[in-house]
Image (tube, rainbow over all chains, first blue to last red; front, side):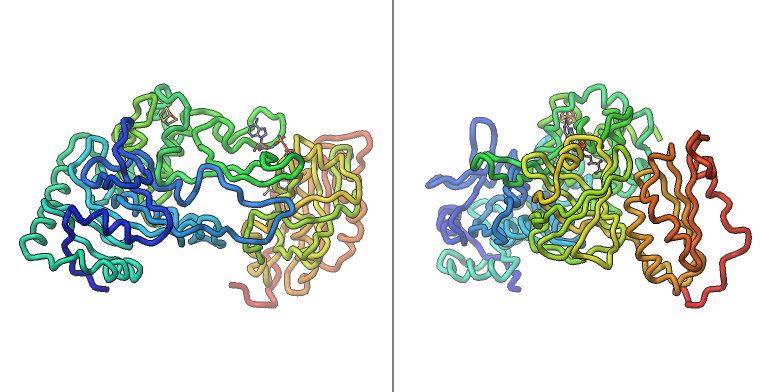
Length: 344
Length: 207
Ligand SMILES: Cc1cc2nc3c(=O)[nH]c(=O)nc-3n(C[C@H](O)[C@H](O)[C@H](O)COP(=O)(O)OP(=O)(O)OC[C@H]3O[C@@H](n4cnc5c(N)ncnc54)[C@H](O)[C@@H]3O)c2cc1C
Ligand code: SF4
């Protein structure tokens, strides 16, 4: 793979984007409610500001998706190719995580696989740091080192562009007229931006210790009383699991929305924080293995910081900070991890 | 252990027969429109359109993928609806799911199977497998317990199982009961001492 970045002028960004594969192209746009994905017709995407409010997960695991019909066609889903612009490294890592879940087990999920195969991924290095970001505290960096088709490194006058796959390389070939050689000063500028971002993130307050240390401290703590104060703040809304880029639990319901009397199976997101999650059959006293919010909250955090290492060899929290922003109870997962870890 | 390309898609199946086991448990015999080859310990989802789906482990032999028996306790929405079904009804089966027992590890070993109540249902698939390969195994001891005599499953088969060479089967009821002349005691307790001698010399090497 040709890994030397090439230079793209800011003014040519829209031209590059219109050369991306697929019929739809989702890009971060500034909205009154914050930056989020959209399909703008003219305005260039917002690549130098805050990361999108939404995770990338809905593009691969829609919150509601028809997965079967009674007695439906045997056809597997066909998803039209699309491009996704403006992914951050934490977004790419979340895709790697979901790949482990939906493609790495004893069977592949055909729906996830189809969305994944249809997507062309364009990532961008982060700048400037945001209050909510703490990727470096969970072993990440604010720029991609793989997992993208194209990556953009913002520099003063434009972007350093590099391809990570053959598909990315084809786009660069098709847009060769827009690209020039990236001079040594530009490459240095890109490197410096990355180093500065790592430094400012690492010195930010409220960081957590190394994820391996956290995993050791938190291991086996589900029943520990130090989770209690956090459960007291949680209002059990499930916002954290909805915005979390790696939360992936789902529930399957029968629906006759399409036509009365003819049922389809709809896969919807679920949340391990909700009391009904893992509810079992019957009328007994113990209908769920985790009747207390405290243990459900602990289980969620432990899945991210402890069990994910054993399951997938990576931390399940990527430090994007979306749960901190979404939480109605003003719970910051970094504070939870630090407080529970310190009490052990 | 094959799975459809779309694991969410139910395989249409017909309810061929219903057998009463206890006041709340029935065994349902299903003939799926295509074979569902499973390993004992794996489970399937039974899907009733518009009511929902629930997991069950076949209680029939893994050697018969064209005819699945499933033994079901009536306890809630899906299981109540299942108990209302008449032979001829159509429903959906998804699976097999789960990993199943590592049955290849049983080679040359003495086997103790302990089950309680409706829990014998999923174990019966394992028993059929164990009986099928019993000349490659050591002693086979089956301990089954239930709260009361009328909750004992598959009573018609006990004599047949006990008659198999190398197989010992015993049923216990938790507390004494007027209609019960057999042993009493909780099965997890009565199973603590089973064999006084060490394992039979293995005829096959075990790994
Ligand atoms: C691997 C496995 C194998 C099993 N094998 C057998 C077997 O061989 N035989 C057998 O008899 N049983 C078996 N069971 C148990 C069986 O699956 C349950 O008895 C069955 O799910 C009961 O379904 P129900 O709809 O009748 O019960 P319900 O109590 O009506 O519902 C059970 C499920 O429905 C959902 N639910 C109900 N109410 C709500 C609500 N208000 N909100 C959200 N969700 C709700 C929950 O997910 C709950 O777990 C097995 C279970 C497992 C996990
Ligand atoms: S967002 Fe906050 S309040 Fe809502 S469920 Fe998550 S932790 Fe609880």
